[in-house]
Length: 109
Image 1 (cartoon, one colour):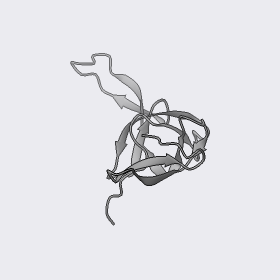
Image 2: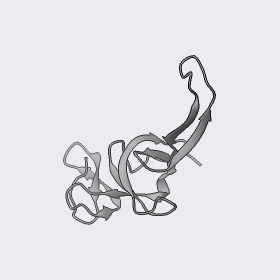
Image 3: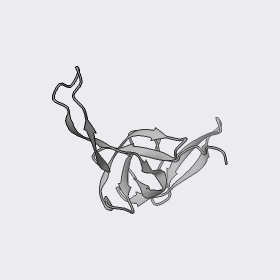
Image 4: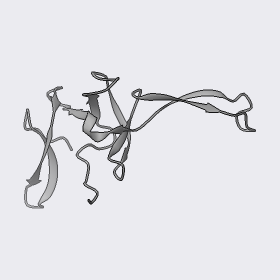
């Protein structure tokens, strides 16, 4: 099974469709294509216990965002502000593929 090109990109606004954070939305901070996951701002927080080090003499419990599977995320269109799926379409003479919102038919890129 090869690595597929994700339909979601960095800085896209997405909403979570399943899991403990269902209904929350945020901006994608990082895409991890090999895992098929994305890190979304202020969603899927985990706690990590860290020992005191020279950099962090206090140590303690850190909260950070963990990756979410791409299958749990849906894109929110910039134009129509609705949860949508993405389709690819060739643009003009250049033949480059651009992402299109399936609801309002506007380009997302």
